[in-house]
Length: 391
Image (cartoon, rainbow, N blue to C red; front, side, top):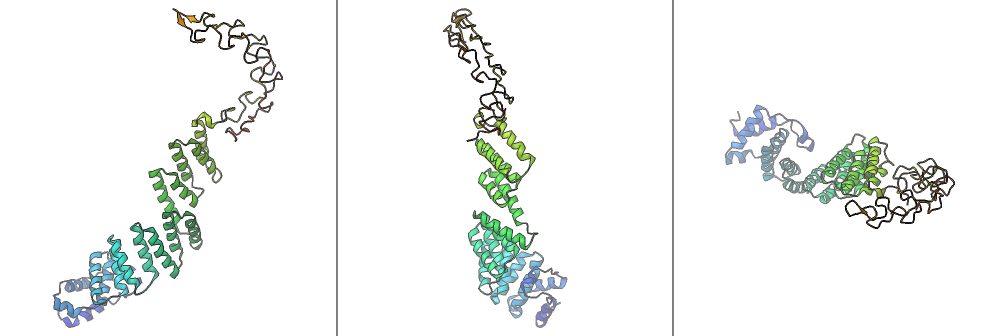
């Protein structure tokens, strides 16, 4: 086959007649038939004079298209180079750029795209260029490229991809607007969803509340982000911020896990974070929520001294009941209760009940049987029954 040099170009044109030199052809499926394989081998092995006689930039470009379709990227690059040696062209630079990008040479690909854009500023070139810039961690330059693409053609996909880039440069508010716009144009766009998943992975690795904040700006009903942010604060020993985060989540979502976590944080929080009067249960600790004073059960008389004004511990003697006023216990050991003073610590040596100051009337209820703090309502006035301190 192909014995005569004169008919090889004619045969090549016949074999590659289905390959049209246009961008769309790059993404079509072409079969490398036995005849096309023989053609490529002959051209690759041809000596210099033979090659010169057959040089045709379009044939080489078509062979590049066929090899690219079959993921033979090294051969595709070689054919594209041969085409460009003969004639610079938009398609020659563009396919060489895509091939280099497929081979993870993004820097080389960007150079080829810049050459292609000198011939035709097509949106697709800017799209591929922006992806190469993004993969090189150059988000700002990538934004410039995608803006150029959007000037030519505003599609839902391009808007969503620009939103992805805006997240990377901390312009989350703008990104949310673009996601909204993209999803209005095409409800099937999933970029926001995928980006949130990526951010969640990043947030779980770094445990930084700010990463969760990005997610919540994009989706304020994301339960896992609320829980993750709260967990970050908790592990940073910022219990109050953790609790505030969970309480903030309840404004947006109704999730049993959020409620459970709030209860857990309240139980684990330091006592300083709870209402000092009701210990976080919202009920009045002085009267147990009954409205009656638990100190005197509503009698008005002090339970500690039964109205006698005498100290229950020393029965009015003023002496420490543990050491009988000697200040010592056992074999000359100092009494731990009175520290060796011999004086009753409960009544401070006066013999009178310190709760009612010796009057026999309970000072907690003023003698009327009602709790002074809640006036018989049973609800803690310090926290208004919320269980947390109200500033």
